[in-house]
Amino acid sequence: MVRLQEKNESDAVDALKHAALKLFAKRGVDGVTVREIAAAAGQKNHGAVGYHFGSKAELIRTIVVDGARLIDERRNQALDELAASGRPPELDDVIRVLVFPSIDLAPPGEEECYNRFVVLFAMAHRDLFMSALENRWNTGYQRCIDLLRGWMNHLPKRDQTERIVFIEAYLGGVLSARETRLADSSRAHSTWSTTRVLEHFVQTIAAIVKAPALA
Image (cartoon, rainbow, N blue to C red):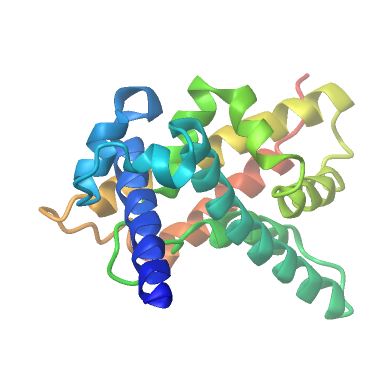
């Protein structure tokens, strides 16, 4: 009986997170109420979010950390494998570590939402987003950025920093756009669903890194 209750609670938590993520990805966190989340999750109790998470803010933080932790683990593993290979990483290798761990985050058959959610949330609530990461769940990203700076020695420090800002915005924007297109089941998206387009994306980020300094 206790195990069944624990399973039911675990299922409810997962349903609430999944429903909230989809709603947040489409409308942003400020455009969604806890009642809407509970209803979308199939919970009869309108106070389900408060019961399981304490508050809407804690639910948001949990969703941020769930995705960030998975991406960070993937990135660090990929970087460790590159380091263990015994050869210096190429620029494209490092950029792939930025790109590919951020896709296919949802279980098979479920809609990808995390990148859209994060982009909207970080734009509207940057401080809350960074607070949720706690300087803990973006270590793989920081390792990639430190490596990318090695290919920016032709640039002044200020320009290096600006390009890192460009890359962060570009990365989130393109991955968010990709999710949006793939979520539209009414249309076939042969471009966005291919590995080739992701490799092309990698090459365009490399172009940002390698572009000459301003005259």
